[in-house]
Image (cartoon, rainbow, N blue to C red; front, side, top):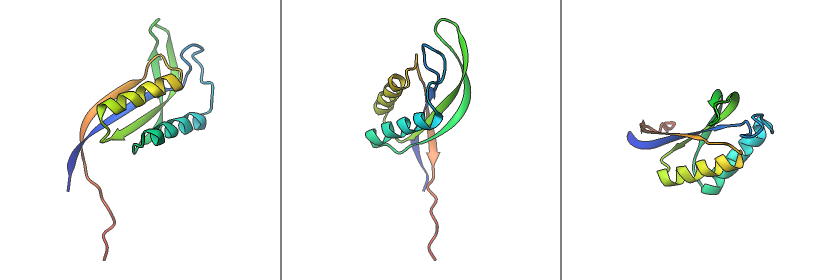
Amino acid sequence: MAEFENETKIYVGLNDSETKKQKYSINTYAAVLKQVCFHYHVPFSFNLEQGGYFHENGDFVQENTLVLTLIGTEDKLTMKIAEDLCELFHQESVLVTFDHVKIISISKSRS
């Protein structure tokens, strides 16, 4: 049976906000992202994307971006996770998007 849930995505750039360079490997950042999700006990998925960002001072940088997807997580908790990731990844800001999606869970039928 289909139901509707909140889907949020948190876009976290991997370039340091001051040096505008990526300091650590993607695997290191992914491990931190996973630990944050484990800490808050939320189901998650993530993927790596390429992106560009304009800093508050107008500087443009291209960078690797981890996109964390959460389904069914309350907005308040999503914002706490986003704040933690912003601080841990030393970002000027992270982007959070909210959507309402229809979800269907498919499982193998048993004969």
